[in-house]
Amino acid sequence: MELIVGICLLLLAALGEIGLYRRYGLKGLSYSCQFAETQAEEGDTLTFTETVVNAKSLPVPWLKAELTLPKWLNFPESHCAVAHDARFVTSFFSLRSQAKVSRVWNVTCEKRGIYQVEHVVLVTSDLLGAVRLSLGAADTGKTVTVLPRRYTEAGLILPRLLAEHIGTIQTHRSWFTDPCEMTGIREYAPGDPLKQIAWRTSAHAGKLMVRQEARVAQKSITVLLLLKTSPADSGRMTQDEALLEHTIRVCAQCLWELCRDQWQVRLVAGCRKEGQSAMQNLPYASGAIGYQAMLHMLATIQTNQAAPATQLLRTGRECAEEQVLLITPYTDVQIREWKGTAGHKVLMTGYARDTGSCADLCVFQPGYEKGDAV
Image 1 (cartoon, rainbow, N blue to C red):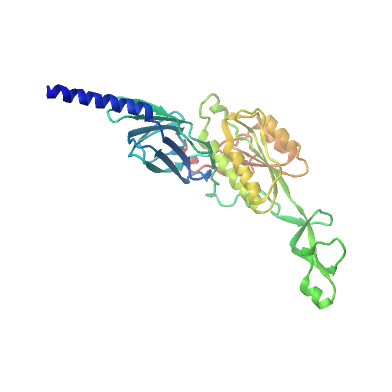
Image 2: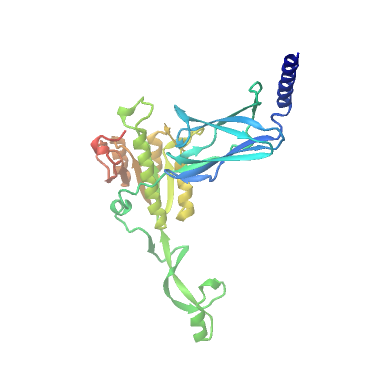
């Protein structure tokens, strides 16, 4: 009799526990995950934090979080699986009542791009495992922009490519002045900027004197990035993706050198952005801000959505009065004819791919000439 009573009490307790978790199991329970930074560079390590909060009196025996992310965000310490372009990461939590638990991952950014946590599946249960409950993630964080890494192994590229002096040239008519270059001192005239007043000279002369700054004309250049694939790669899924990524890194190095030397740079990429049919085109820019904008543009490029080469080369023909630099993995007869007409520069990145015999400089991928590149 006592055994039967005991069994009944256990059943009642179990039913009560099941009913309690069914009603209150998800109450006060939340999950969030986010990256510590929203921008990184290829090869950088980011901090990724998962946080679970249990704000109720009932404990959470276990909570399983299944995350789907791009495979280029590598979780080296986790038990994860990779399928196609997705990485699946699983983590488990156990929380007592009124508790908060955080788990921190060190994530390596293996490739440029715009990434985010694509999907989160959360499952929890009661103490007996009889009740399965699911909930949504409170916050999956913002997108992470992984900028391309500059190709620095070959050293400075532009001094070997551009024969002209990199920088600015003095001229008689210009809207711009260089405060570092002075041509003399003159008396102050109404309308002169106060920042040009030479205070020490003014004190000696007994009247306001201003510095005369040299007028300069800033050089401008259009960089054409043609992610052109070889005819031998036609129909392949990858289309020599490693070489295309190397070409983007070489382009990043050239843009860095130009912006560092205060060129006015316009970047035109012959590769469509996802969801858009037109080529990507940035206005003229310079300096650190302009360089960052160009890197963001390079990060968004989809190498499997190439725009026609004819359209990009037409853009180069429209720049008759300025320098144009074409960066491409391959050359052909079309590029040779374009260069012969316009007289611009061609930088090639593919080994033994100068079929147009028109490359001014070749910056090969490391190991490519040995057949080691994939």
